[in-house]
Length: 300
Length: 332
Image (cartoon, chains in turn red, orange):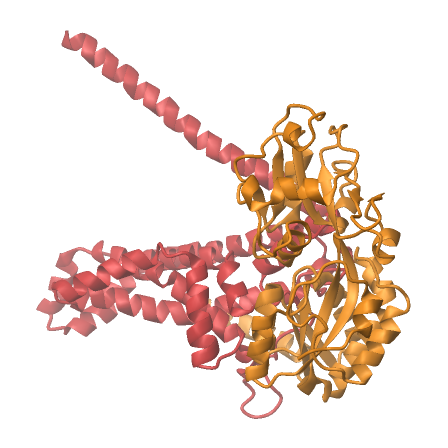
């Protein structure tokens, strides 16, 4: 009897493997078809001119210069706002916070935040950043809005990464007379950097494709000039005026082109999507490289 | 190694930064309807070329309502609108001391479209359209046979723009008689291309949207003539029928609203004048229908005389000719 059962189990095991493989392939096939379609539509428009032209009413003249520069600068602000806050919050919750109901409430709220629709973040930002703090419809507002959006992801992945470090490491550090901060600074943080970066990148990859919150705070569609340069010819040579300039981003431009009646604009949208994919890929690649460097340094 | 890469990146950034010009420039801020957007985009593009980049124009697409919200807070110089300003919006403007000039800039025809395989619809009357779209039709009018008994026994599938769009407001006002009064069980999309795909793949489909989308999809859609209730004639939307006011009640004027305070800025005044002078050519180029020739000089006069307020008095109105509009006394 049990021999029969054993055979059945083996059979089921194989069946499940095939089932799983099929599911994986379905997902892959769908995304491949999508990508191929995108490339067929968009590749003829992928020229250098497309990258260095402003939007235009004639599709063949239109380009994405203001859009990709906008996306790049907004992500720049997002990185500088989300990483310090998110990582610090993660460290606090994992290393310092006492286990009581206040901490529990904080944890539940952070977990819930990651499920809030992104347009809600846009409305919040419109009220707080644009009107209350008077930052206007600027790159700074856009970056901070997206930072709020990715914050839960950064916090959660920081905690995961910190939790993966063996307790023995901390104890060894304390045994040598290190304080809690010294332990965090010289051991916990460096060792968990790889995991933290992964989380940051997942967050940023989500943020770079967001349209709704940025449209809500007033990202523009037609903007045929670039923000003020970060370097000035006068002292102190570095200018932050670009932070308060108006902007547009890639997904907003893509959305606008997709909804136009003319087919030529749809091709532009496909080409811009390819560039957006490339930007995400480059970001991911950079993160993988950094993670590799950090991991190599760790010798336990 | 790491240092080298970093410093290289810094140098590249520096060079890039120096290549960009750093002068502060005057900016004209426009926001509002996504229907009017292509026209203002074209104007902004050309105007910037003419001014050789000394003036910047930015255009957003917050929608007609969202645009007026910003406009009445004094955040924008010009507001794009696919319908006249409403009473509520007028009140907000008044509270904030914002005065404005209302200028019609183009026509848009709303086309009613069916699947090319549909060989039974020769024309539709406003009553028939109302029967399909009014709120009471929800769940009841689901078959072509119910509209006219001789039509085939085929499910009627409706497609239309989302409820936040000015197009939806105008269509319901013109057909049902009350803005925003519509059945809810139709396929709605903010992206008109989705509607095109829907009707093209559905033999019993019917939908409405801007005539520009038909022009680009002639092979996938069939245009339905609409009976003008005043003359009793069935009319197809075209540049001529819309411009001459025969394609009624589904043609509507598109507007820009200019903040009076912004008119004091020479670049804004110049931009609006440029807008009205170049409209006949550029409006056509982006797929809309220009106003009759006489209308643009009349609008320009209205602008130079700074005639404030709206001629609509906050009430949506259907079927007015632009010349009549421009002669009407404004309220504010």
